Image 1: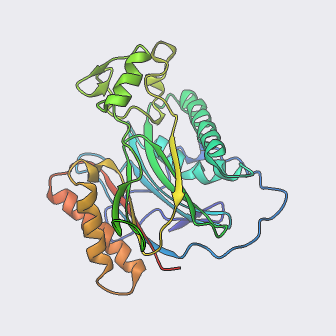
Image 2: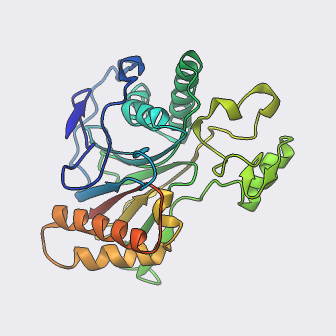
Image 3: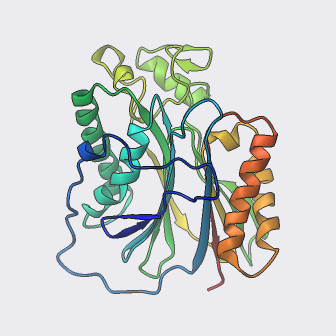
Length: 311
């Protein structure tokens, strides 16, 4: 475990095949000091939750996935990143996502979108300097720590966040939900957007090359002649965290072979085993990853399980 900006960012676990070491270009990954609000916000009790994560590398290449867990004063943030074409982009997102969010005096859908635009601009500038063609998709769960339990889901690419939310007065009481929507060239809405921008989709890939249709980086897919084909515009939704519920974030190495319900059922089974939620969340991630591998996933696999307690 290491720290970035004095904040809790989980990077590795010696007991699993998780290669999330500092990138060789780490000295070039510029970090901008956060622009903090003039007034320190009132300190509320954090949303009561536990969490765990696991990651496995593909058998064919080094791990390009990354994971980020941050518990701060203003907000908590959980995110998984899926890199492609190298790990520089996913490492950059992991290292700088908290920083660009901290530059925003308030956090809402507009300012979060602005933060992601800044993140993209800074990485594109760096990637052009280094002639690096990597890209990264990510999904993040941001929870405000102001007592409201408000959450934002930030989705860019083909990672996914799903939830089993328990609503005591809901119908039904147990609700399985996909809290993000995959951005793939094969999806009808994304395909339509690409075609309207003058692009092409061949064999479910943008220009026959890239499966995800939204990403950070991928400078070779964002040249002027391909403007608007692959974009860095996140889909941001907001809602309220539910007590006694389960939230799973994972890269597409899981979702290519498992459904939302299968993943959530597996996580729930592990969380019912004992009262040690921290270790149970880690076991849930491990069970999900091992099942995905058993079903034939050959991609990098990274999962975070968040379990909210009662409040």
